[in-house]
Image 1 (cartoon, rainbow, N blue to C red):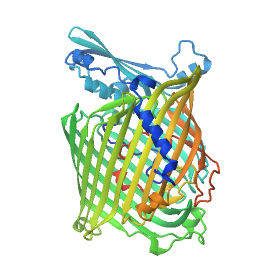
Image 2 (image 1 turned 90 degrees about the vertical axis):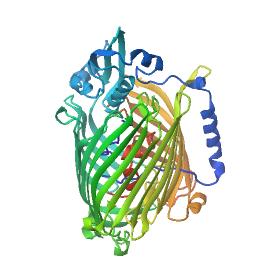
Image 3 (image 1 turned 135 degrees about the horizontal axis):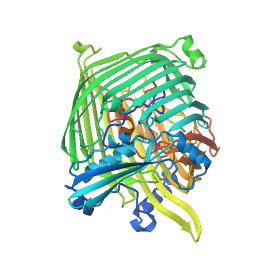
Length: 617
């Protein structure tokens, strides 16, 4: 949920490069001016003009809070509806319901922060709803109170989704034809445990991946997640064991993590691999955290731990070229290009301040699925002190800080932003420094009509990014292309230590719940961005590229997580270094939105968002 650190272990993130999203301007500013004007006009529309009330928890208004707070909770009833709950179901839908093992009532109850006999607190009820929604395999979550004198009875309502997903995927148009096949179950035996097994072929790498995620080991507050990744170029094993923060009301947490890998790393230029090397990495850490403050306003978290991080690099050999089907005469493995070996071992101190200001909206990234966002100001900072007498190669200090904020735009929109910086002080100088900033804008509207013609329910979405690196390690670079910002060019076409970009989309939701199985929509978009090793001014004036296009969106609201499939037709506005010609159409078929509404720190964690971006693992 938004109030706690995101857990990164899943098959959609591990086993592939950890690259941040991008965006900004391409070519003359006149190209983008009409889009910015339209954005400003739509943002300024009055709240009643095109918008509908957003879906939120059942307990939200101040009057109800005043009525309910302090009353004794007499009973809590849990109702888990079937995936398809129409009273007149045909055989197909009845069969689907019978094949799905319903989520156990105990799984729902353990996420509730309120129990029978407690005094009712609205904030805890709202946090409970957010907890349940964050599980992914439950939808349409609400808590309904009924007052009887000094007591209140609660009914917790939610609906199962289809969680056993046979995966057979293929994506193209990025310059790489990628495919995957496997099985995924995110509510194993109705107990809320996740297991995935997948064969993936991506960017020349082939391998088997397996993940097991138990959010409540033996029904306790302890969680475990582990992953094994066996690829043709090496292997990776990861695990995380701990008691994570699940709510702003929680007073303490701890975590033990490990990540070991031996793979071939790659650097890119113009959509092709330009350099490869063998890398072996080991990362282990432990953190204990305690929290103070008022959950309804501001919470402070203090953490103490220990971290060990080691990376060793060596020249790629002939077998590494064979594993990735690369030609040694075209791809360098010059030892001069190798990053320096590094090892950091020592204590970690961290602080986080979270102000609570939640908003819940649908029709953002996942059609009718409600998503939760904390718009309150958040600040986090950490210091990893790694002296040589504790095993570090050289004495160093690794410093990290993030600041995020948000603002409502009426009742149906928001703007969110974040700034982050990470650096390493070693040998009396700053090294491997990343300064970054991002901004998100979303506003959804009511169904729209031209006369009697229905033209869909629109959501205006915008995302702005900037990554600025200085004295980066040689194994680190920022990439841009069709898989993360510029749909009109091949993946990994643009590379460098600076990256900037802007994405604008008008997401149109045409039809919801076709045969109760699928929703369909479309999008018109404008992308502009680039990456370069040259000066930032040069990047902004000469090295920016842009594209425009349209696409279709297919959502599956009855599936776990509310998955989305995207088909885009993109037209580059400028000849690209990957061989793309201006106005040459590129079709991109991929899962998920190109960019979504979450900040990078929510997707990767506050520290990882500044550290792992730009590394190929």
